[in-house]
Image 1 (spheres, helix red, strand yellow):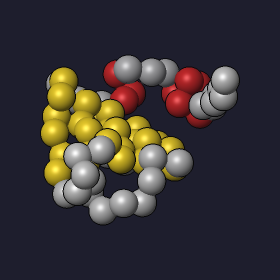
Image 2 (cartoon, one colour):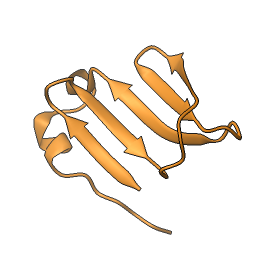
Image 3 (spheres, one colour):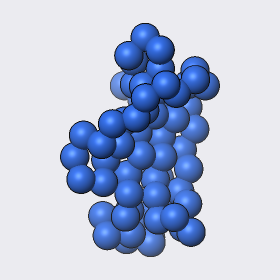
Length: 66
């Protein structure tokens, strides 16, 4: 999985695998899901991320596996 914060475009993107994206859908304002050919979500993009989290929160992302 890849996580990318792009300050220039003000986006946060989670990419679950490298399958080809065939469709994208904005499911809520500023939340876009990317789908592969099997209709499985392979990525999630959050727009205007600076309005959703502080710079401190974006500089340190914590992962937790259960």
